[in-house]
Amino acid sequence: MTIKLNGENYIVENKINLKDFLDQRLKDTDKIVVEHNYSLVNKEKWGKIALNDGDIVEVLRFVGGG
Image 1 (cartoon, helix red, strand yellow):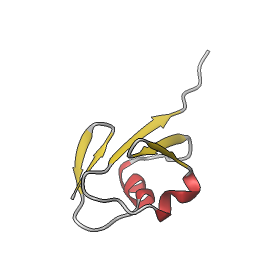
Image 2 (cartoon, one colour):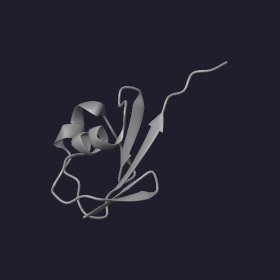
Image 3 (tube, one colour):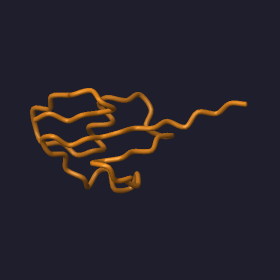
Image 4 (cartoon, helix red, strand yellow):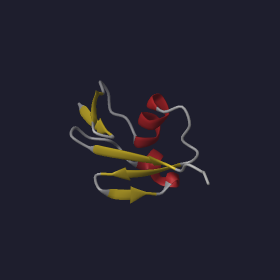
């Protein structure tokens, strides 16, 4: 199945949940906000969301600065 992450397609062989998908592709998931199919998702729910073919995941990172 194909999952789109920040505009880039990723091929996933087996069923996977959102948390595992993000953990496999990102170094640090502590300070991010995740949108799944145009809806914001609380971090506590990532493991309960099964990804399906064609799903869209967007990740935003918090960046400090001055």
